[in-house]
Length: 355
Image (cartoon, rainbow, N blue to C red; front, side):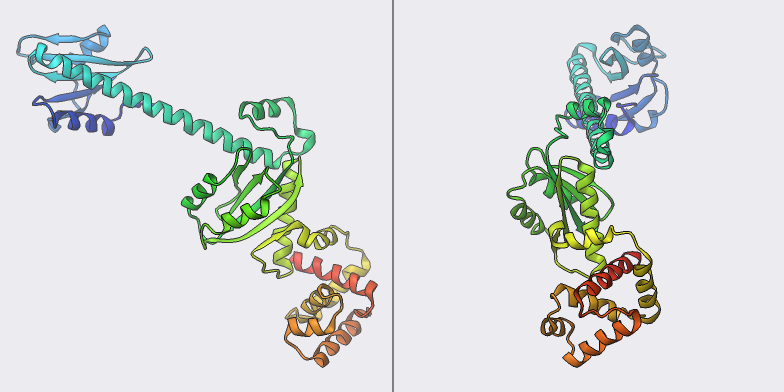
């Protein structure tokens, strides 16, 4: 990668020429002028630079000739690599110190860019590792993976909680602010453009920390909290279930955890048998606006409390009884019976997950 580019070389030349009354040329490793006070010379080959490159040392011209102007040509060498040449026209004794300053400036700039590249590469490697960690099963914690974890000083055996934050829109400044609020042992994974997962290690104060993060911006729309686990994938899977189940059951809490929807998550894992499939089919064909499905969910959530159900659905008790009778008529299961209600509830959960 050419760290001495035309853009940053011209910046160096322009800045130095603001201070000293000499023209400065900066050449690449082939001797081609890439920056100059005389823009017409950019792109041409500088003979003095070519000689400095060949010799790997300064090439000074003490008197003007038909082919050369007096001045100095100092090679820019970093880690034994020839990066280019600094050329300054003028009396050699007068411009030598200026040339050395320009060379040092170029070397420091290159060193800084290399350092930034190293940091960027390490950050990319870390982000790749974190994503891999979030997707890796326990049996895949092999020696190579554990060596990577050790390199990044991450204890992958500690219990953590995956928390998914959903953004209304992509704003990198929000993610940066979140990162500043994290503790040692917490890690951020960009799951998608709208979803950010954080592995939290400090579980006892988790709720307070989540609340603090949610107050950062109104663009932080919702938050889903998974189960604690020493296998990252298990916690990620649980938080994804929570998000999916919250959407399926129309749960609009801003912060919702696996504990809030544990039953629904467990019911969603039940294999559909003939009875469940029959209920689902009848509700699909006879409940186009999902009124009966929603009634089943609310009726179960209120523990069959008709008064609370009517209040939450904004309906009269007679309307509720009509709907419960309609459900029994369609499915053959009376929702006023606890076991029947469980079957109906499971069927609705599975239906919502298929939407």
